[in-house]
Image (tube, rainbow, N blue to C red):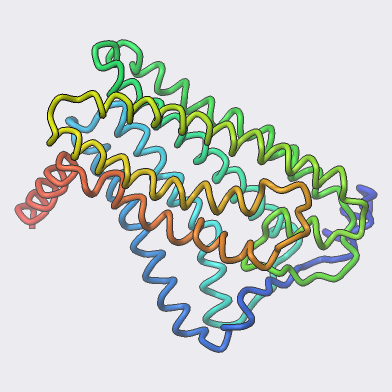
Length: 318
């Protein structure tokens, strides 16, 4: 039926399913890799879910910073869940096939959530800039309405750009081969597999990546540059050390995320370096979602206190 629909749309598609190649060089270590990635996935989901739960339950964490972190952690749970379960199936059972519609749905959800998360990080950096550099104006600028508008803007900007790009890729012809040199359905490998002229699609993918990633990166760099200047001007050496420690931790995660995303998406010729894309994507889908809970909140004293109180309440209720 899917084949008939595709043919009616006139895209000449004859492929009804794709095969995800995964990591063929180390596939013989499937069970070990399954266990490692399962533990990383569970730790990531647990960490981000704890952040969402605590920031919702504790009224002291009902501030703009934790509001953005709550949304970001929720996005991270959804983002990693789009890819990792299928990767676990590949490692454990070797089942590497994915249907044509499921592949495009996965590609859309993955890129959309990743783009929204990237824009949200820029918003979070703006929030920290206002809090540190404009502390007296912070309650007025970052009110509840502004926070909702900023989060809505992240989704509203990402959705039309990504849906337009995915529709453009979907309209390409796929007449074979059907093996995707990746561990999930991403747009670059799909473009590479098409038997159509993909030059305009590749350029569109490049422009969309440039708009989203570089806009987010520029906002983040400007915000943190101003934060660093403000921190340098702090009179207390202890305050400087504490602030720099927090910023450096944030910048480690940002470097990993932006570095992997830029290396994958911000290049005019999407058909090149697909092999390196797998390693970069693994960092983006496994490592950074695992580090984010630790870097952003679990090192925070307010979160530690809220977590201890929640655990104490759970023990009493038993």
